[in-house]
Length: 141
Image (cartoon, rainbow, N blue to C red; front, side, top):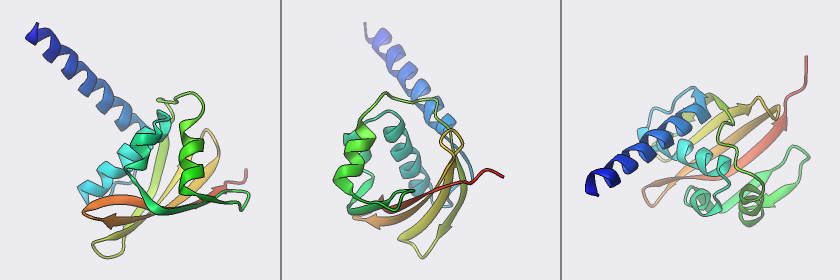
């Protein structure tokens, strides 16, 4: 029975790793813990797991939507938790820039939604968290 549980656990780890790897492509953060937080937050968003997403979202988080609407942490987490999971949704990281040891900005795009998202990351209590994000619509050429 123990060998079977171990095999199931290994399968979950491998599937989870392949799903999270497929979700973020492109530029990588120089700080491995920031990269891990970016991947975990995106995975939580794709899987519509608000509780997990909350771990990587600062209490003071604010989002500015593509329409210019300002959304609180609570409203974004609620929106991110609704609807079906999208584990195959790809996100392309265009750049990650560090501003000292405790602040960073990532710029990503979601080809499926034609959006570009700028996220400000801060290290709070040793953990990386999204402090704000801004979504812009990418105009067709």
